Image (cartoon, rainbow, N blue to C red; front, top):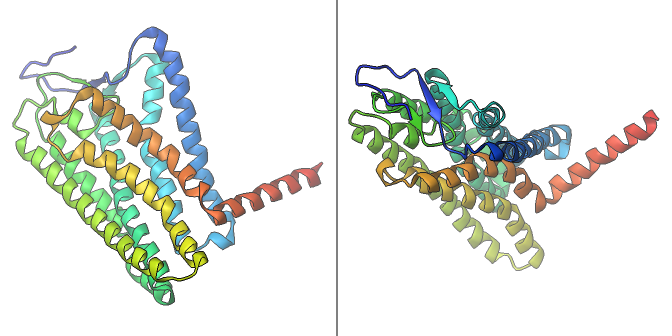
Length: 314
């Protein structure tokens, strides 16, 4: 560990969040590379599928393509650096690179928070107000608002974190520059920064969850009023995938960010972080495609066209 004197300026951090035993580096590199490749193919594939199939040019699938790009973005902010560390053994990240990694990760994660809420409202409008769906959604939800909120949210948290002084140590007990792990290294009073982190994160999560819960409450009431089994199944099928993604995402976010850094268990945080930073972006395209007949149908069409083109080419 590298300790810092009080008058020394930290110019780099050492990321020690994952096992550094030599015999573990190659297996871990292979595992994380596979996860990243599946994430890349799944999310960019979902985006391309939605672009190529005109039947998917709806507001719901527009939001799903945005979600795929966001998942790819915040996974890409972290995973390549982790992979490079396994391959080269270099765990050092510069101060500026640490700041950039933290900023991009939390921008994309914040945008996902607002996107999931928008998608819940989208489902409410589609199921409960189908006649007004297009008008409502084009004028109120799918704007650049969640992108601006994500940018602002990340700016506040990253600015608050790096306004602190770092003079005790530059060893981050994490595999990327996450806010609680970096904030824990500060030798200045971090109470205000911690409270800002908890309060803003709590507010964002609470508002998003409130929108999601109210939307699904009204969806449930509307679906239960439908007397036909077909209507019940159709209403339910539009929501199952989204509810799965919501449960996974908010479960880990609440666990990670709605408590002061002094209450965090380092090892538990690492496991949770691997899950939400790498596994969730990999799982979302799978979750949204497994129970979605339209996505399956579009995939079969694209696959059929590809086979026809190959056969015609030969």
